[in-house]
Length: 284
Image (tube, rainbow, N blue to C red; front, side):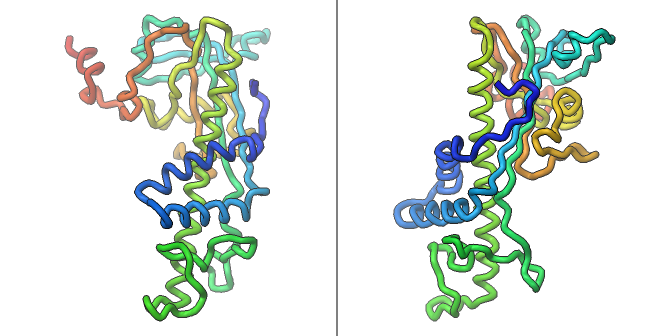
């Protein structure tokens, strides 16, 4: 159980799950040799940096108190035991109205980040250097998988064009692996948290800024309840997170069998005209 303690999740514990995400997302539509070459190149890119992959998380458990149909007050569990007046943080989202009849027993607020997959440095000309000597994919990659460093007589592609293609495929692999390890880490986190809650309770779907109709500004509320820096995350004044492969979320602890928001609510942007639930809610 993480509980307020910054944790580094070993890459090897997420490798199989991350590879499944990578193959499903990046290999979509590819078949036969093309798919094999793509996956092989992706693994070589990953393996050239595998010792640097840093997966960090921090989780805080919070007590909760209903304030209004669409808002809940959260208080860091440690603050509840202090002699000072409790400090609550307000979290607001239309989706919380669907928990009106549900006794929320608490909430886990968390941050995650993945780093270390970035291509290394830049060359003398200012472009990203190709660092694939350790069995990577760099300048030996094209649409079919492999090229050499000379002008290709069949295609007319020369060094500069291939240099551009190499940089593009590196960037693609980097982004895809970051997203894949992040997805694997989120799944691992929920599994671990679910294993530590009392019998008779379950976790809600993953809530968070930017989905289920929750404003991106709620990232600042999350940052007051769990320390993003402990997970290697920096929140800008505009509410964006760095590094790019960062995630924040909330899991509410609910009684087993409690109704939860429909999956269609996940992509809600807060428009009350957008779905049956909101239309019914606003009918009167």
